[in-house]
Length: 207
Image (tube, rainbow, N blue to C red; front, side, top):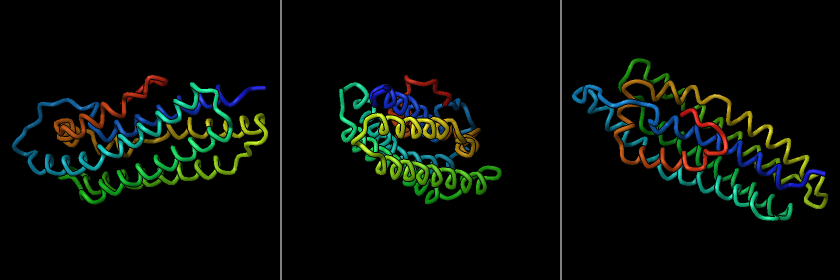
């Protein structure tokens, strides 16, 4: 019988893959050297978004760390359930808050800026909804039967793995080119990037 411990490790690995989604919004893959004069408006936009992203990146990292911790202890199913449910709720709230920050900032001053912004907000809200749904699934798991609980967690880990690999395409589109360069200059995005990448050692980051 597979216990909850190895399954929760799969959860943690899948979750750290999800940190890449935050990296997509923190300019980690951009290079500097853009024409600074034309980027004043973009810099203002990037600062607003990055300042909104930073506290949420920390919240996502804390949720990651909580699940990682449960993998290293001999935790009871009830403890794992409580921790995972709270982590998914926090991640749901964080992605929705990042979506709200991008929405509030308005469209960046680039080609197709409005469409890129709207697509990214939709993607972030969808992610928030997905984590909320996972939280509900964890809440419904039975903790009295460890084998059944492990099977339930396995199913959630599979979904989480798909979620972590699924599209951050809209976010990447939003932060390509001049937008990414403007974001890369923001101190709050640099720290959000460092925060989000910290737990990503369990799976390859592609941010």
